[in-house]
Image 1 (cartoon, rainbow, N blue to C red):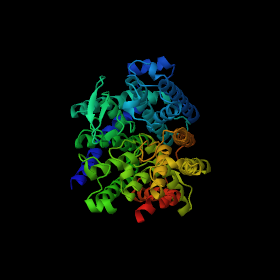
Image 2 (tube, rainbow, N blue to C red):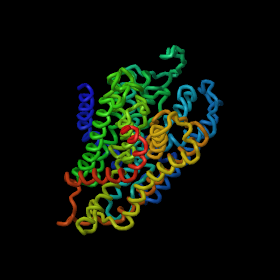
Image 3 (cartoon, rainbow, N blue to C red):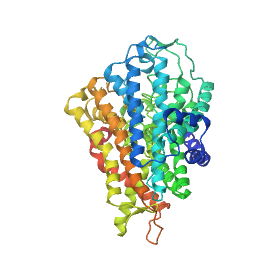
Image 4 (cartoon, rainbow, N blue to C red):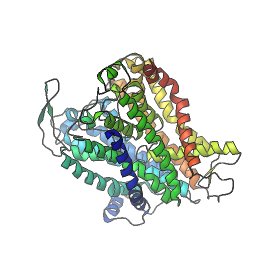
Length: 548
């Protein structure tokens, strides 16, 4: 009962903030006035805030900004031993630096190292934490650009990337992060620049934990749905997640922006009911996933969990099974990647759900921005399927879905599965699956989870897999890079094709895309597409383990 009350209170809180916070974000991304600080930023980087950009220019801005960010962060990591506040940490190896730079710039935040024992304060703050902000802002900016394409009236422009990026960071991410940081500090999270807390581990060994800016990093980690943690055990560490109510707040923060963005979508297209339909799809998929994950873990399938009465391996006692499973579902439904329990220790079907959440394309509600535009692509595919069923030209929000739009939407959907399945196959073909702790179906699950997490820019790890080798760092880095930017370019091209169209008026044959029927169709298309793509791999991994 406590577990269900935990989930119900989350739902009620998200419902309560959907309208006011969504309206606030709408005013931020559509407002005509810039603040003094924003105007200073534009002058500093030489940007004309009044200049509108086509999809190609917008995409080049995204790619150029991200490329420079990767290069800067890579160099930062390579020379950290020579920097102020390095705490005597050595330089990070070449392959791990590449992996980490790509990881944080793509908003994946996959970590092949222990944060508190590998990085000094300056790199954590000026390198990784900065990317926690800007990589999240890039995702929101692209989502806003896609919505402008759907709402456009033949201009062919999607806004200004640099304006969107600046406003989102300064007016959305920073203010909420500061407020959340203060709350986390009150809860007992560490926020200082002095080192030195000795803690005794369960094994009786003494470990030196360097105190650092954990509270602020945790706030932006969850708000920007980033998984990078200061402590190696992430949100399971009492410095990062001390109590049950901080656990609740972390889940709320990682769901806050993705679940509120459909309100921005509805306001921008001039039909709030369209936003309600999109958020309803997100809610149906999310609630179903959380219920199933909690159910599988509470039931505790398997010999040992049945014998001891609970599937508590890999879970913190202060959270228990239901709250840990809720966190696991929420972090994989979004692109957060933070964990407060070991997914490798979950029951076979519970662990499978964490993978399926990512395989859905992280659209329920998905990452900040990426979830919204991913679901809009699925809505376009659904409209096409419905058009085939009734023999009419498919339209979405008055924009025709022709051959070009269908090709772009199909390629968008196919990119990530191709990356995930190709990477998994390559690991086994080259023998690099030998770094997995387990063999058989569970060993396959460990490898499949790693590429699913990287390709979908999630960042969480199943566990039981050593990934700090040159092959794994390179392969997962490529998966993160391609999984982030190929879909972004495709969805911006799709938005540009819509932006060039004049919206057609509704007719008797127009499919209502705001009604429960369409919501159900989008849910069905999403589940069927994922099942057709990933079922064979799941059958060899978690399904085989669970049924055995």
